[in-house]
Length: 360
Image (tube, rainbow, N blue to C red; front, side, top):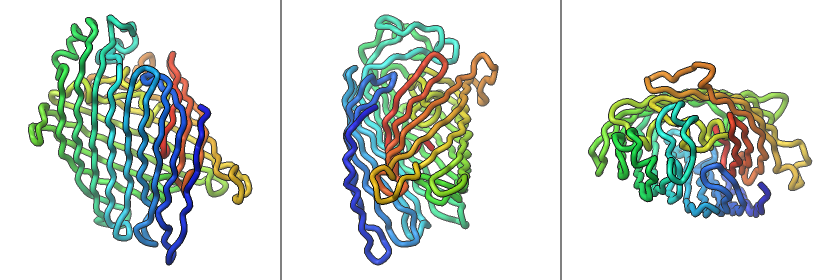
């Protein structure tokens, strides 16, 4: 993906605190579900005080060759000398899509087509997290998750799919309230070079705030970062698991193959009650002189594998594993804030991605 990156991050210091910096970005991208995409947006970074990690807010909007439109935002902020953390995800989109059913067999045997898998959906998610420090490196807090999926122009294959009909159908609204416990010793959480993250998150969805579903989810997330040789040379790995139970709608089953894990598959093709992914990634900021634009460039490479299943634990049968390998380019737009351009290859699939911030 070649694109124009306009770097306007002119951060200044004031009493040891960096002033807010804004970086606008325009670039093309490609993913299996969106086709070629022109995305425009920016990222703003700031520091609440000299003892608090740098916060960031990234916002990107785009339109694609398949007729998709989307707006995505991600807030990662730190307050009161990192005693309080507020994070949020915003995703609003309208796009043509394909539903392959639920489970590995359906995902790999159902033929994609206008009569078998096609439909159009409007979907949104608002997902804020508020956590407070209860001990050094240990945070506890609440999770809110509001999502909706409205489907139309259903192909005969989607209209006749049993899981689509019985798991929510055309109109779904989820309203979730939950708790999160996190151990976080990363040096800079937005783009760590060392430290680890251990997180447990439980969310219950119900009729509050106009919700139309009743189910629960459990997310376990382990990430570890090690500096190799010098700053900007990082080996990291992630093990992530998500289980769902209850009357889980088809739109919110656990998925493998997203822009934040394997980065090689059509997002939404592989879904079931539970999913686990494991990734190892190496990131290197290139050692060019710091007073040149080349010093903003970096590279990355990863390998990973995913599995899913109908129970609380995925099916780890070798024939049903989903491998992934990929390489990427990094552009530092602000201190420890990167724009990533990734290319991943998987099982009969490949994908390009353009995103702010690292995948994990």
